[in-house]
Length: 378
Image 1 (cartoon, rainbow, N blue to C red):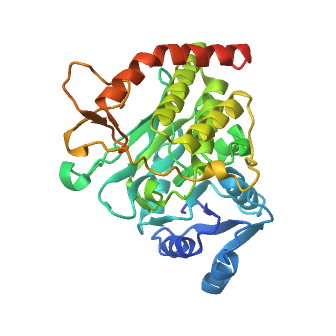
Image 2 (image 1 turned 90 degrees about the horizontal axis):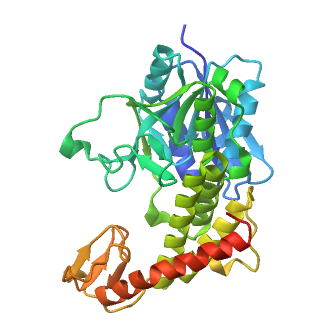
Image 3 (image 1 turned 30 degrees about the horizontal axis):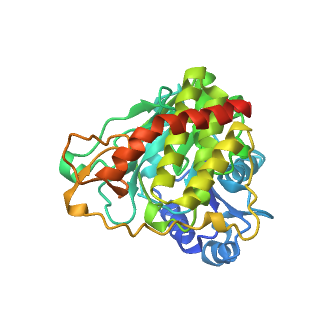
């Protein structure tokens, strides 16, 4: 008998993506599952569209407010676990995903074969633009840098061959993961104070601390639409930085915190140099909030002008002769003969300016750290 699974989809204002996602779920070759759609107070008619398209084949939970990704998934998990049915597994899906027909079967098969696993994640591909490239296939936590080490990100299976081996990791994104109900009962629900981002990392790490393992399962294939090109404001920047700080402050060592603050300063300093003033202000607030362990849904006032995306600098720098580097300031070298530097994000700066900023960096960093120490934040 196939293990009963609850498929839980969290949605906020992505009606068209959501309908495609549900359709792909209902076409799964695996049969023993129920679908729970959690709508986080959307105003685009998502819930009504789901009822019209799928009727009683889908259980709809309508939250009165937007409780974020973690709160939305928790609503679905609670509904499934209180339904009177015994679900062995819980499959979490983002609304902007599309699952291949055997994606769920592959996850259930993996979990059945690996009782030590609390969570297994699908191999995520980019839905748009480069569908053969890996978007996410699990990652490890880099405690030395207070960051993450993605596994096979942007790896092209057309060029380099298909990834067929499963891998043990520190976490997999909640875009498409399956969790063992027994492990959820042991570790608890997602921490809703994250609201958005790093909640899945915290959840997986909590389960690892309980003695379970986390895996990325190669046979489960799901496409995910999220991309930097679709970014409309800096709200995701805020949540990513705030929750990154909160996560490593919660679990990291003193050395981890030092590395974290160092990277926070570098980001702020770089934004100022590139005249990305809104991004600089958002990261600074996120860091302060994170160090003060402020969680939940962020509150911005006066229509939040600081959340607007920065306008790209119109500085006249010759991209054609720019040297590609990891960081446009810290990797500057007076002897490399470069006229300009460009990084993987498209940031570009003249070599003369970069060298001046690099020389000023140590004193600026010392002042930043002293400010934080006086404020008892580090």
